[in-house]
Length: 321
Image 1 (cartoon, rainbow, N blue to C red):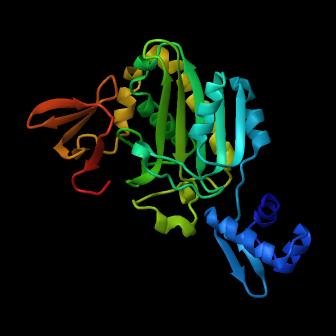
Image 2 (image 1 turned 180 degrees about the horizontal axis):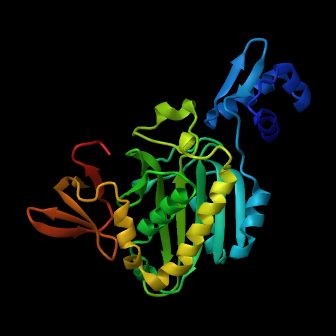
Image 3 (image 1 turned 180 degrees about the vertical axis):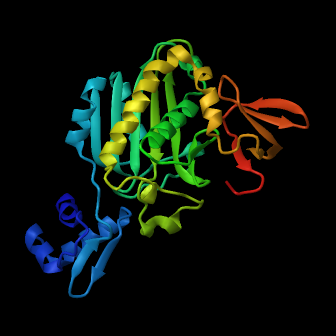
């Protein structure tokens, strides 16, 4: 499959006969391989007399470039995988095996997850799926608000790369033009007060293929036209990992309070009417940002209340965000 991908990665048509000859396979096996690529979310176009192509081509991750550019960050292990069930799961396994700092990225996730167990649609070589594993000495109690700070670091990285208008939605979504651009999923293991390991998962829509649009059940955005065409997915990943590594190196000593004001400045629902959905309960009020622990502040009938992330979802009153 990888050889077939490399032949089609430039987005140009290749005749079936030339693909069969180059790969040394039969025509039925070629058709089966193309169907397998379609199952990964790739837009394979066919044209009589011209053959097959991947619409728009592919911007594959460059594992050598990624490892070289990030060498100074002292990761114990860097994995750039083709397909995986979940980058978070692989990173968790590495941390359980004793690594102290790991990076796992993949072209495709078969079981990518968002918050509250929701599926994260992960077509092949279209977006970014990455997880950082990191050890903290102060325990899970010192990491309140980390997911918000991670979202802020990604937002600031995109802004530095010329992508304007990226906002945050409490607790861990990135929005572009009020539509979901990406998300953060953090998983902890270890002691509340002693050493613990953290896996920070980030999913970011870069160039979503048309073939998967119908499988996404909410409004979404990708970087597409907003990102310089000269910037590759590998370069984008490198810059995001650099920013996140700096954040992880500093967060335990600073805490979320150092980031709260900057986070609120790019919160899409700051001082807006919102609803908090908590199981069968619902609270409506004005969002007044977050506190030093990253809990959302909602003014209800003149009283300011705080709510932790947990199993709570925030929605705009006047939209389906």
